[in-house]
Length: 89
Image (cartoon, rainbow, N blue to C red; front, side, top):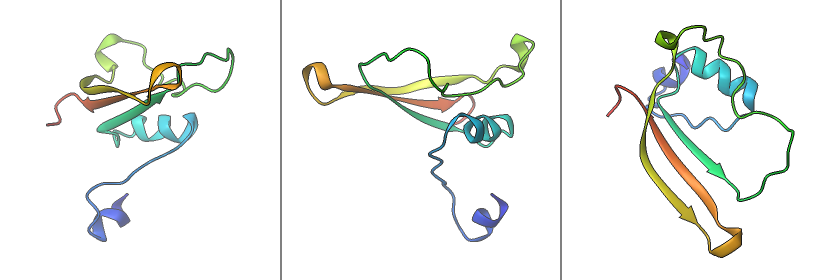
């Protein structure tokens, strides 16, 4: 991340599975989340985020809803949720 900053990047897109996503959240490097949800439930599978090791509510990571929208039409529509980390404008 330091290298990206030194190269003039202010934003980095992370599209990852639960392990890398959890590592970035734990390191305090995530200030914005875009979550896409299809209208389908398959049952078991990978989690979006692994265990963050949070033992107390005071250690939680708070986000606020910036926008929620439906993409597509009717039964095939996906939901997009845009969250911003608490304390970020």
